[in-house]
Image 1 (cartoon, one colour):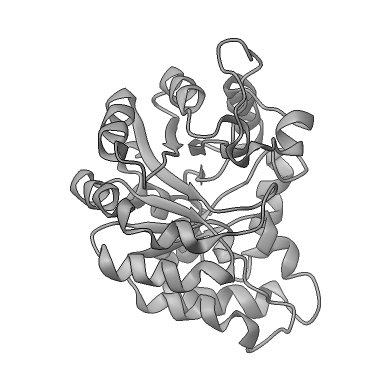
Image 2 (tube, one colour):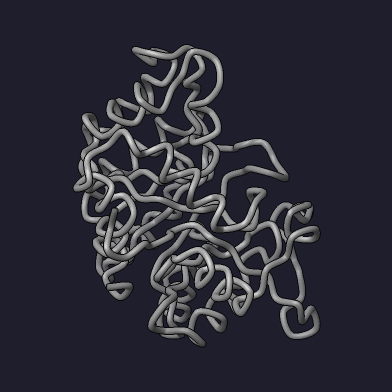
Amino acid sequence: MASQIFDIHPHIISDDETRYPPAPLFGKRSDWSQERPNTVEALIAAMDEAGVDRAAVVHSSTTYGFDNAYVVDGCNQYPHRLVAVGSVDVAAPDAVAVIRDWVGKGLKGLRIFTGGSTKDFDPTELENPAAYPAWELLGELGIPMCIQTGPVGLPQVIDLATRFTNVNIILDHLGRPDVLDGPPYAKAASMFELAALPNIYMKLTPRIFGDVKKGEASAETFFPKVVEAFGANRLAWGSNFPTSPGTLGQIKADAEAGLACLSDEDRAWIFGKTAQLLYPSLG
C-alpha cells in the first residue's frame, strides 16, 4: 500500500449560504449536496479518520456553478493537505482572465462538468473552439483538466487530448464504461482506446468499484486489464465523498479491496504517486 494515501475526487459544501450562495449549473441543485453536505472541516475530520493524507478537492458544479469561492477558500485553510480543483466557463470571452484570477487565488486544477446527477451528458461543450484559448493557457500554466462525461463524449476527449498534448486530462469515473459484459470487456472498448493518448489519465471512483461486482465483471479481470492498457502511473483513486454513500473510510476500504489483485507498486501509484504527478503541490 502507498505510504501516503491521496484522494483526487472529494467535494465540499459550505454551511454558510449567505457567504457562499448556491447557484447550481443548469439550474438544478444535486440531491447529495443538500442531503449529505460536507464542509471542509468535516472533510479533514473524515480524512483523519479514514487515513487519507491529502486531497485534490473538486468544486461542486451542481451547488455553486462557476463560483469557486468555497473550494478555494476551504482548501487555502489547509494548504498542506488540500488543493482546489475549480470550474469556469472555458468558452466565455473572458475565460483566460477568469482562469488567471482563480489560479492567483490558489486554484490548482480545472474541471468541465458536461452532465451527471442533474443533467444528461452534452458533449458539445467539449467541441467549442471558443474554449481553445483557455486550453492553451492550461498548457502554459501546467494546470490539469478533469472532464466529467460518459462514453458519448469520448470522441471529443480524444480530439482535445490530441489538440492540446501539453495538457493533462483526467477523466472522471473512468468515463463511465459499461463493464457488465465481463472479459474481454468489449463494451468498454471506447475507454480502452484512450490509452493510446499519453496525456489522458483516469480516475477510479466508487462507481467502477461497484460495477465490477455486477454482471460478468470482476475486479480481478478488469483492473489488471486497465493497468495493462494505461499503466498505473495514469490511474488515480478518487473517493467521490460525500456524493457516493458511505463514510470516507468505507469508500477507501472498498477501493483497497477492489485493487488487492494489483501489485504493491501499482497500488502505490493509484493511491498516491499519480496524484502527486498531476497536482505537484500536493507532494
